[in-house]
Image (cartoon, rainbow, N blue to C red; front, top):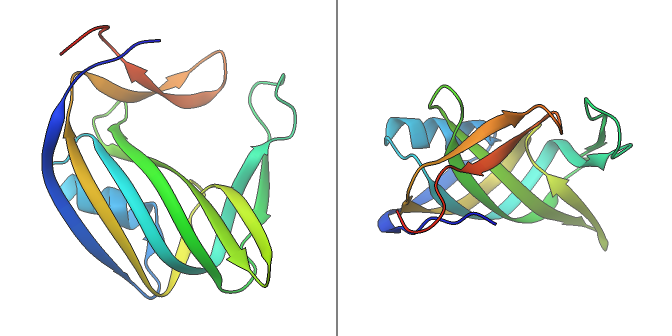
Length: 152
């Protein structure tokens, strides 16, 4: 395990509007605010898009993701972490649980989901040590990387 210590910076409350796409709109906001690292809590509803529900085979690289369509309006909760990619751009890794009619669809929102009516997000900026989201050759996935062990 690697760890770095930080503190809380700014806190933002976002009102996502009908048609906004997650993660793109949150990443754009983070870029506009020069926010490097942040925790995101999300609630609202989505009506279209795709959820990544794991790789088809965990031993094959590159990973062949299981992509599940968001079919109709789903109530949603999500949690994620923003970290800069290899170019310094903010990248959101968010998992969510989307429910409709007693069924739940759970997975990564990386492929994009579209807001229905409204969604709410709270972003807590983390003033942490050197953290980034970098491509990992062994897994074929961009992974969170804590660059220095101990306190920053």
